Structures are given as C-alpha cells and as structure tokens.
Length: 229
Picture 1 (cartoon, rainbow, N blue to C red):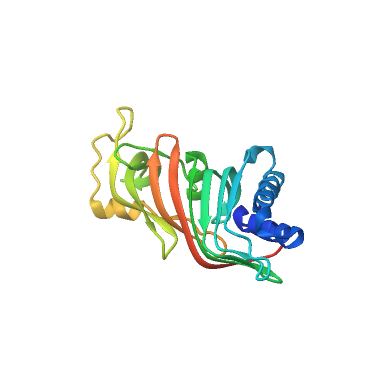
Picture 2 (picture 1 turned 30 degrees about the vertical axis):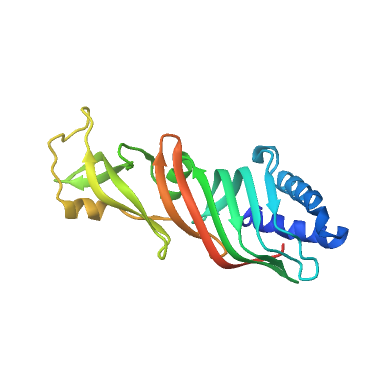
C-alpha cells in the first residue's frame, strides 16, 4: 500500500473476501486472493508474496493472526520514499471496522538499502566494520572546511523514533587532508546527528543491524488503526 503498510490493506481485502464467500474452510482461497491483491498493489517489483491467516471469523470480521511475506514494499520514512525488501510481518488479531482496520499487534522485519538509508539521513551512509555505519561530514576547523569520515554504532531510540549514532570515531583515509586531525569525543558527538525514522500509523522502528548489503530493521506496533482507503 503506497500510503501505509501493505499487510494491513491485505487483511482488509482478505476479510472482505472471507465475508463474501463464506466459511472458514475457504481460508486457502482467501489467502490466494490476498496474495493476488498484494501483487496487484505493488506491481511486478513486489514479487510473489505469501499470505497466511488464522481462521476467518466472519461474524466479527476478524482474523486472530496473519502472516505476510513480500519481496519489496514501497513506503515513506520521515517523509522520504524508500523501499523495504525481504519484508516479513506477523500480526495479532486484525479486525475490519466500518472505516478502519484495527491491528492488535504487529511485528515485522525487513532490509533497507544503504542508498535508501542515505536518502533518509540526508547524507551518504555506508557499511563499516564491527557493526558500525560510516558517513562523510564536512565541518569548519581552523578557518577551513574539512571533510572526513566518521563511523558510529547505530542504536534505535524507539520512543524518539531516531537512530542514534553512538561511540563515533574518525575514519581517516590515507588521502584525507589533515590526517593528523584530533577531535575530542565531545566534538565528535556534536558533529554526529541522529537519523529520524518516523513511520506512519504508530508503528515503531525497534532495531537496526548493519550488513554488507544493507541494514536489517525491525518494526513493532500495538493497537494500530489504519483508515480504509
């Protein structure tokens, strides 16, 4: 879903299918229809998704749980359009209301490329060793602008919805100017700024793990309400 998280729309569609076609024994049919709905929403780039549902409760228009796996999901993080890949999400009870879908709980995991993380951060971000992220900063020192790389350990502040870059240190390349530069820890802390990662619908980024091909992220949410488009 281009205005929110795909799996909530999918459960909405599935509940609509279940309510129309009947009994719980048609769950497999509903799952297939949900998979088709995701594919149609995301287009060819989304890959062939898989959907698993608990028993459909047609009277209450709810499912006790849902499991969705999608290759690629477009979404906005802090106002920047990015793509999550290898998306897997599990929900608690999902209920279809008159104007919204209510999700009791959701836990998801996905991969975010360094290119998209750089877009969110507003600066180039790359992998570094030992679970660190590396960015290049330009600051004014001794009356001159100096550019150098700083690596830091990323930690998610779920309450503030930012990635804090902790324990920063200068990563000097042999071709860097001012190779003898020395910055105090306070100076480094002042240079390195948190990366905002605000998600829609009360979902929270809960974890980030740098890898060679991108960062693995975790997402959680409780009592989520998504308006029906």
